[in-house]
Amino acid sequence: MEDELLSIGDFAARCGLSPKMLRSYARAGLLVPALIDASSGYRYYSPGQLDQARIIGHLRRAAISLADISAFLRDPDPAQFDRWDRDLSVQLRARRRALVEARSAMVPMGGSGPTAPPPTTEGVDMTTAAQAGTATDAGTRDTNEDQVLVADGLFAVADGVGGLRGGEVASRLALDTIEAAFRSAPTIQGLRDACEEANRAVWRQSRVSHGEEGMGTTLVALGITSDVGAVVVHVGDSRLYRLRDGQLDLLTQDHTVVAELVQAGQLTELEIEGHPHRHVLTRAVGVAPEVALDVARVSCEPGDRFLLCTDGVVKALSTIQLETLLTTASAAHQAAAEVVTGAIGRGADDNATALVVDFS
Ligand code: MN
Image (cartoon, rainbow, N blue to C red; front, side, top):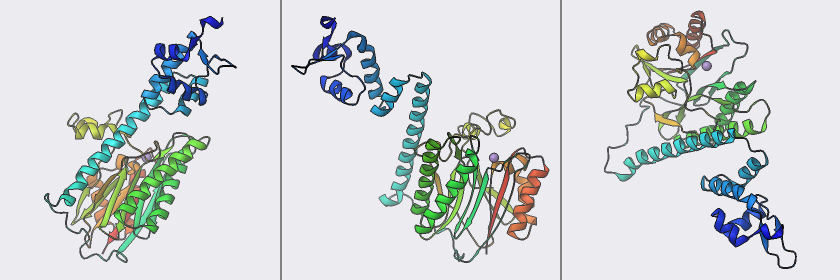
C-alpha cells in the first residue's frame, strides 16, 4: 500500500504544481498528504489525489481564492463554474469601464486636449433654487420596489429588483447610503464614492441575508455638487430627462441588452418595440462587488425642469406624452403626480415613480 504512494517531488512533477504550492495547499486544508512519515516528516500523496491537485492548479490560475476552492471541493456543484464565469465577466467589464474613465480623465490633465466643459450651472443659485415634487404608485403589483430620495442638493430614484423582499431592501439601502455619504462629501468625487459605497452595501447585505440573495437596484441620481455643479450618476434603466424651452431631452442611456444593441448599431429603435429582452439590465447596483457608474456633468439653467423616473413610467408614456405633461403642469409636485397618474392610467404593469426638480 505504502509503496503506491508518491513522494512530494514525484507528485509535484506529475500534477504540474511545485512542492512549495503543495505545502501551502496542505496548510490550507485543500490537499492533505495521504501520509506523513512520523519520523522523517516526509509527505506522501496517493495517485488518486492527482486529479484533485490538477483541478486546484487550474482554479488557482483562474485566480479563484483558496477559500472558494476549498468550499467548492467540499461540495462540488458544476453550476459553480458558471457563477465564476459570470463574476469574471462582471469584473472584466468593471475594469474596462474604469480604464475608459481613466482615459477620459486624462484630457484636462494633459492640458493639450480640449478644455474642460464650461461651468454647467450659470445663473442658478444651487443652494436655494431647486423645487422638487415626487409621486409613486405600485400599479398592478403587490409591492412597490421603487424608492425616491429628495435631500439637500440630491435627487434620486431607484428601482429594486430580485428576490422575495430583496428589491425593496436594495433600493432603500442604496438611497440611504448615498444620502449619508454625499452629505459628508458633496463633490463630484463624493457622489461617485457614495454610489460605490451604496453598491458595496447592497452587495454585502445580499450575501448575508436570507431572501435577499441576488437583489440589486437601478439608480439615477442628480447631485448638485460643490465643485462642478449638477452631476448625474446612473446605473440601469431608470432615466433622467431635462425639459428646456418646451423640449424634452433624455440625458441617460439605458443599461439594457437592447439599448446596448441599438448603440452598437445592431438594432434600430423600431426593432426594439416588443423585443423580449428590452428590459433585461446589463448593469445594476449591488449585484457584484463593483459597479460601473455612468457619471456626467449636466447643464442646468434657470427655468430647467428635470424628471427622474423609473422604467414603469417610460414603458407607459412616450417621450412626446412626457414632454406634454411636463410642459403643461405648473408646480413640480403636480408634474410628478401627472406623470405617474398618466403611466398608471395607460396600464403600466410595473411600479411607476417620478421625481420632478425645477430650477429657478
Ligand atoms: Mn420597474
